[in-house]
Length: 431
Image (cartoon, rainbow, N blue to C red; front, side, top):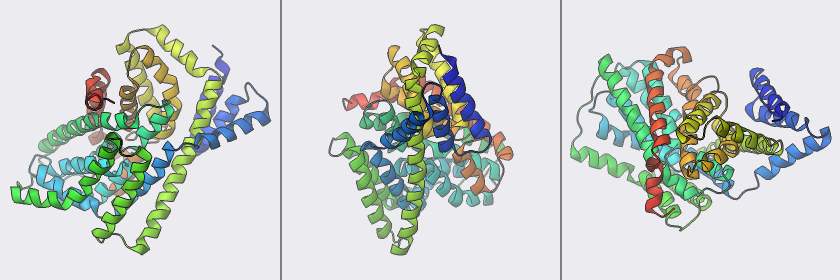
């Protein structure tokens, strides 16, 4: 194996991150430096620039800015309040009721908006002060909010699963969306169990039990929001429209819903569009830069070499999957989800397919794994959002975060070694 390209790639990327270079630029610059090992300066710069451009030339990627926009519309359109009210009637009377409300609401919000940042922001700002008023520690509330928000990246619609479909060379988006439901719900249930035990141990207050009438009323209020899941996912699975077309329908539906709830005005729409454009620009730059790094890796035959190296260690599926999970957990500490999926899918997917693993199953493993990275410093974006909204520090949040972190790892191991958790639903629809 030629070690110089991989040494240059890893060393340059780590150094650039360490000196505070933005992730997208770190990826692009380290890609150029890696190419310089094998080709002259001008072709290296030209190739990387070209790959950044052509990497974004995909119809499937059009779904991402549209889902981002629909997420912003939902976040500002009063949906979060209605989902929280519905969740409160379901789990508010259980031990750690407010924490459980946070988790269920985040799962519902994530399933509708497909954004961990939107879920963390909405749930943290609405439920955080209420939890503190009821005697919950600020740090515990932040830890619950941070971990719960990531479930929306597994439960569809999910931008990251669309990115994985692109990186994998064509894994069915409909199959990936269906495959995410059980692992996402399972992760949420594990978080609820830990949060309930912690709350009981600390003696936090328990809310009053809701009547059937209250449950029904809040369900009816939340029904228009929840119905979007039926429209979007149902339409994709039934083959009525593609994921990209579904994202446009999600924008139209969430816009009409925001006006119906009278939470969005024509004046406020300008800010929503600008915020969506800003988020889209960041995500697309990350995708373009990551595609250039994927190409540089492929040009230097690094994925093939890593694949051979892993298979030389063992041909046991259990061992290889454990190694890949550990590597991805480590990667998630330092790299955001989108570039990590684009860079490491071409490296690890050939390994697991040789061992007989379904690409859809591996996609869920990878995304769930990297969700854990969003909760860990130094690059965990959801961690910083959650801590910022709670007005606390990372050091104080770590203690209540650890049990929840372990719950997510246990869910990851179950999803990794029990393929049916991911593949059962897609198999029902012959996907």
